Length: 333
Image (cartoon, rainbow, N blue to C red; front, side, top):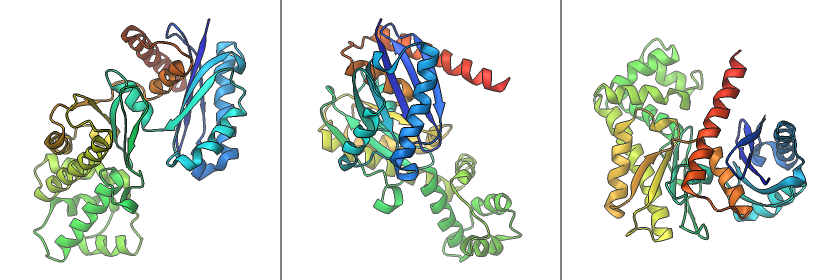
């Protein structure tokens, strides 16, 4: 029997799974945040050890029996970080080789039909990366959002909404339904109180308010519609950047959509599709319908030399869904 490890290291939690060559899930571990930009490399190691220990205990095996591992790590943004990350992972004592990727890549491997293409993330923040067919070339944006002019996540949508509300307050534009929605959200007394309280940091309005913008757009508010279309075009431009880097323009490839901002948000998705298809008309936009950590497991299987067949992919996703559901049900008891 051969065993493979997949780890999804996030900024708030880390999931670790062990599977065998038949796609059976043998062990699971959940530990805390592991982004080394926030917790340092000692914190990353502690988080990895905790999750791995839980998963190994359930599987009844040792780390030396792991044949291959894939780790998607939040905070792995630049190649310069790889040596220290590899040194940290090497201390786990895994028996096989491992590959470290940015945490956008597992969603791509999990969601794309053949495990390659482009992954576009729109959740709290935004990011975009891609792999070619044989995983030898990667395309990317910085993943640093507004700092580097990349937009389309909840952070940027709410910032733009507050700009719009400020324009309406100053009569630079027509009134917007966003004003009343955000007044109620913040508990402000009126529009001026909202704007004053926001600028004076009495009303900390952050990415959790993004659904208000989506709802206002669905109800027909012109300014909210413009914001959601703007966000979609921004995400599409990031995907186009990666498309050019990987020379995908004439190919049929998958664009996997990952993140909460894509849920019930057809205006944003339609604008993103328009932007991408203007450059790459054969691109296929797909919502992620598998747990992202599945991509990490598949990368681990590749590192261990296991051929990934469509049947193995489907078996693995079915078993991962069942394992995640069982874990969530147990926590709810």
